[in-house]
Length: 104
Image 1 (cartoon, rainbow, N blue to C red):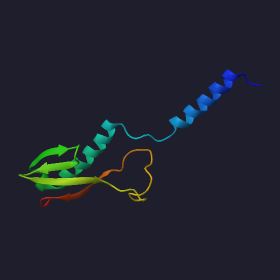
Image 2 (cartoon, one colour):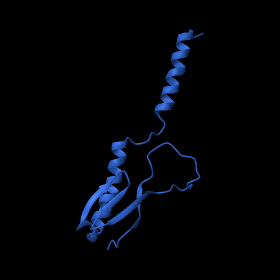
Image 3 (tube, rainbow, N blue to C red):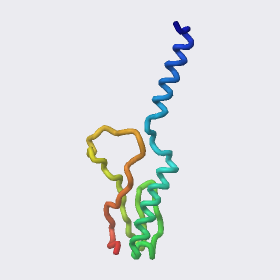
Image 4 (cartoon, helix red, strand yellow):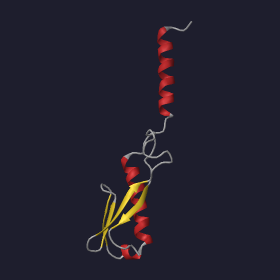
């Protein structure tokens, strides 16, 4: 028979093991780098945008260029749709939604 302290430590270690193996969300700096990469790829793919880019905004997920042009990005909806329960892990990637000016 195990002493009470040994049972408690064994149960605690088991809980910590399973908690550590769960997928965690990306830290904000890693998520920002992913989002920035998507926006930079967009700018690089569209010469009209890259010629006059002014700002990439990670707070609003937008790219500003020209006089008053804005490209909007949204999170890609997972296969389950918006009504599915949120799952642990990184957020879905950004995808281009629309722009207020022609991009090509």
